[in-house]
Length: 325
Image (cartoon, rainbow, N blue to C red; front, side):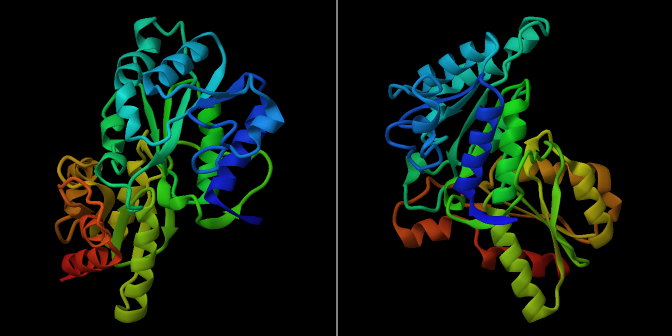
């Protein structure tokens, strides 16, 4: 398999789906002539033209509204937000319209739209550009929420998202775009609602999604080398639908768990995972489930303070040792 970057994997998915289905088109701020803020859409304007790669005004609510309307009449728009922190301006469109139309029209009108773009922090973009809002969207019935951590999953899940007849929130961590990995070629898809065991282990289960999956894998390798502790790393991949069966199977093997995410600790998505673990596997646990998350503060700009606010490999290692104590 070819080794490519995360952004290249996304571009492959977009290109293949636009070639396969003439109803697929891209819209957003600077997706065309500027080639995309993170270069995901590079070359697509030249290949597919202005009718299918649409530069929009700086209006997130307008982008979302146009995409929803296009989806309602049978097209398959892929709407890019320059950052999901800006998607807050489109919250009414996403929550009150995209997520509700199929239900409120009695199943007669589908909304096959993908809202994608960078999320998360750690790139010194300060408080207004560093939100991790996945738990907000996962809270809304009618939205699917996807958070791929690897180039292979990014490509496969974006193709699945474009083909889905429901609105999909597709969140790409900004620090993942330059990461590299093997990616299958051809018509390769990854289903939603299927978690992936990224590393086998026997002592403790680390549950993560998006960029913290890489932190968890690095921490697991250090623990194996220095302490002989073998961690199993489970990548949730999609938060809605959520695959708890894979998580519970792992916990029945290791009997201990640590949940890692970049969202704030208070009411973050990890709290939902912990609640389901205690509800369905309480008797399997030999220690309390711990969470490793971002501090409950606005994300600082200063590099040293930003690093202190976000979860780190060392934080994960400390949590693993604590549940094994």
